[in-house]
Length: 500
Ligand code: ADP
Image 1 (cartoon, rainbow, N blue to C red):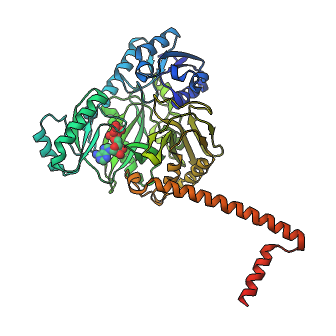
Image 2: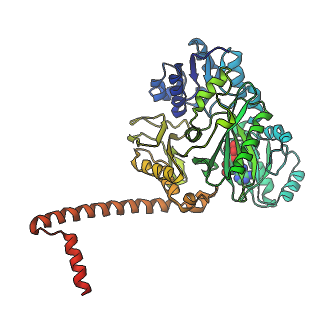
Image 3: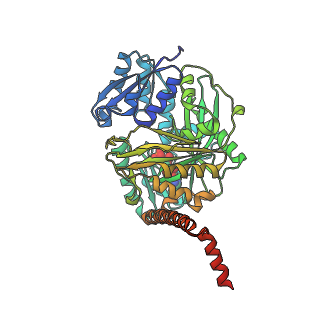
């Protein structure tokens, strides 16, 4: 396959910029696509060329595959990188890109198709001795049989949409008499959100951790894993804080999960970057959840602990090159943590809170990486995902990574929109997070809007304390200038006198 010279990134925001930066480092020119809402967005300014592909709603722009492919063809593009979200897991798009004579920087349409559906992915891996979450192997058509299975698994159970994604299409059923109602709701939701109403049952884990394995495969049948990411701090089944490595995995479990993930990839002849997600119970038993056939939002933490640029590797793989490393070349070095900065109000159920970004000052310094796609003064469009930036820290160990990211959160100045940063700071300092002893229930167990108020009060108290100390210092200086002794000495003298 010929070398790629020009890439179109079929995405927006931070991920479009992140892909273009690596392309630029590789001497590859870049094309941005944008909707009318993103005319002045940073990813448009950064690209060598840019094309408007439609009005603001995603369906008419970032999901309009024909417009995107037409733009690529008219500008002599060799390859399309889909980023994450939008068309990244759309097998039809990957196929159309190929049929247009372009390279899709990602897996084959067949792999996307198999893994894009939770049930078909479970079928595909069945022969590979992968631990599976107990549940129904097929879509529910017979309610009586489904209820019998639910009783066998034991309530509560989870009804999931086969085509589900982004934490949507999941319903917990606490007891049998709620089954029919929740089943109807799940099917309706799945039909309207994904155009496919088929649902299945899974055992509902009451204290689960979400731990996933990054894999990478080439077109010559080599597949390796790049260790795990711990993603258990979530709201609405969606991740907010991710870290690598996990605080709880032993080398043996890491190795076992890695082997399983490689086998999952092999089950669908996978190439490119992919993620195999597992649910881990309180005894560290792990079970296959699903595979995401794309670059993940949280990929930077893996890049930091392995030193590998995943996008560069994806481009090489798309060019037909073999993987540039073997499993035994990979090592975990240090610790990385990512927090998602979303324009959401943690005090109001994490509801999106878009508006104009009046102040936007990024933190800097040793061990801090920011991936974003916004600028001060910009309006956060209501049409797209509310994530505006990713703040990532890297340290020699977990404690250092936590210290650095908290320092960076304190330096991050954002006004005009409310963000998830105060919640993230709360979580990162919480005893459960610090000890590593937490699961996906973190928000429901420990978080209430009041803790942010307490935090704000604490900050105010700290400021008052600093000001008071400053005042005292100045007063002491003045006194010293007056009589040649310091107040501190006076105070210790006073204490001495009192003892006597
Ligand atoms: P999606 O494709 O919508 O992201 P996933 O299957 O990846 O759905 O699950 C998203 C999250 O939902 C998980 O990280 C976990 O928090 C929760 N979850 C999924 N399956 C289960 C389960 N069987 N028991 C408990 N929680 C689950």
